[in-house]
Amino acid sequence: MVHKQFYDEKLVISFSDVKRMNLLNIRIVEEFLRKEIGKGVKYLYLNMEGIAFIDSYAYSRLIAINNAATLFCTRFRLFNVSEELEEIFGLLNNKNQLRFAGRHEIVMPGPATVQKSYS
Image 1 (cartoon, rainbow, N blue to C red):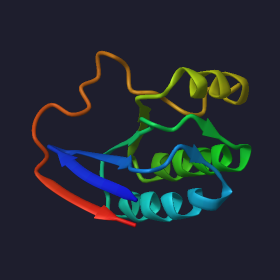
Image 2 (image 1 turned 45 degrees about the horizontal axis):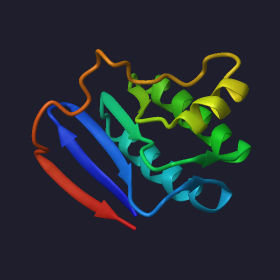
Image 3 (image 1 turned 30 degrees about the vertical axis):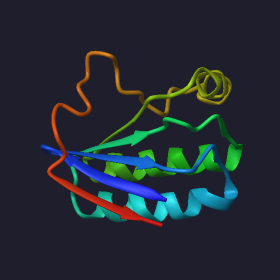
Image 4 (image 1 turned 90 degrees about the vertical axis):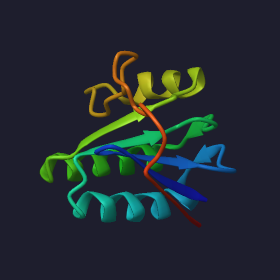
């Protein structure tokens, strides 16, 4: 299931019951994120909490989402990336195509103003 929460101008996307990002589930995530990017959201954060593995296809789709976000002037960032994923991204992200929310970047400053869930 995909959860959508707004914090001021920031849209945070989270997952429940997802431990692996792969060919089977990335298509749903990609379609969802592209719709949000098309709506003109300026800040889009993907919460990777609980995700321990990503396959190469899912990684390539995250790159495509990032490219689409750039075209629409949307800032796309990943956060809560596990050590396992950091290692995988380190091997795959040789051109630094994906960006991570830094410790200084406040992703969720207060209570969500809108919350929706999709499956």
